[in-house]
Length: 247
Image 1 (cartoon, rainbow, N blue to C red):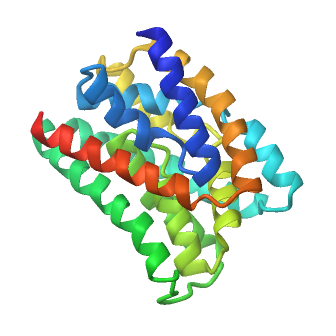
Image 2 (image 1 turned 90 degrees about the horizontal axis):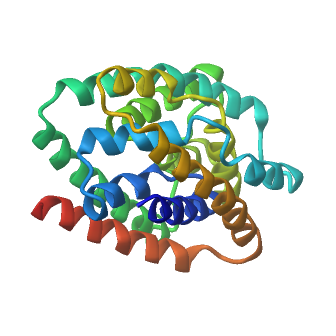
């Protein structure tokens, strides 16, 4: 299982570098479907694997290319840290079956999001002011989702930055990835750990794979269009959503 988790981390890291998503959106359903983890166990391991700056090599690459606004990334990180504890509390309190159904809806929403952004030509509905408060709010929302579903929150941050703050796709991806390098999920990880849901060895194996994968994904994102990878990613989410629902 340890080798399989390393490979899973590698795959999640590649997607993290490509889309700035943190990787949890891939790791959690895979651990549930392929390794028979419970929802809470998968959440805990995923969040713990992303505590260390596992995507730092990708962030450095993006920064050298001029895609990262460090100030905005730090502000979003603050919101993420605030929100993740609340999200974990919700996940530990709510009925697991309800949480799993909510997660299926969340996965399918992201499938629509990745296809929808392309076909709608990324039309902007309303531009929010680029203020510290607004970026903290984005981070808090992403942090709550991260704490509930064991992911880094990038799947929320990137669309927000594109649609409401007029970021281009690569800048949004890079800024999101940078925001996720601080230990923003620490409150959530602590709550899962004290409730006996965290396996540290599994988290370490995932983290090792993410480090390598994120660096590779960043190189791919900078050099070639990512639309083909988005389609593959969306198909994986459909498979994961159906599998969890049937289970």
